[in-house]
Image (cartoon, rainbow, N blue to C red; front, side, top):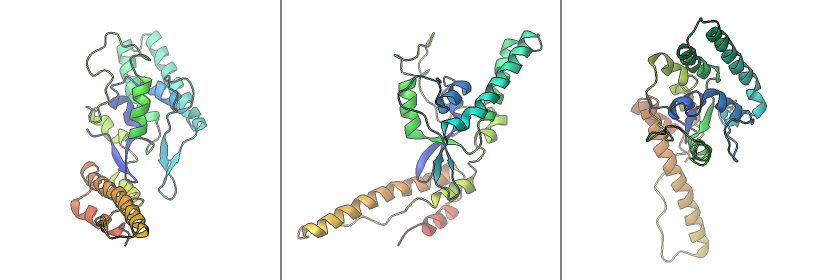
Length: 234
């Protein structure tokens, strides 16, 4: 299952999906404490999560906004430990229940930027920072299309329905072809051309992202073409 989406022309990962794409190397509780600015995992660069603001633009969550979720996670863990201690659940059963329930505690529609998260993850789980015993090939790799239990697929992607991604597309810009260089152009014209080409290159990348929205968020090609025309600046 593909667990990335395109928002505002940029690839994003739902926070609920992070334990799965990390193969549960990044556990839910460690993820929450990292987002809360507490211990979590060791890294010099803080991990930030975002949610769509009123105007559709991403807004970073403050560390303190994770305090309530931290408390809920600890409460879930405490109740499962009690169930295990009383014999109501075996350890394996309690752990499986914790995995399923802990991801639901993350708010829907909250995400991290893929490039920021990949940089954070590579540093946080480098072999000099974390020891895995026994370590198997791929244990430190991210899998953006992992197997996910059927009952959790909609839950992980809650808040990233196609209409949400379409709204985010409104904040991207689509392009025409770049300007062609002229050997007789003046310095002023050259500076203007380079500026236009740079802007066009940025927009061309955005168009590629726009096309990816259709593929990854099940938006029909006809609807995507309509969105591209709608949000193209003259």
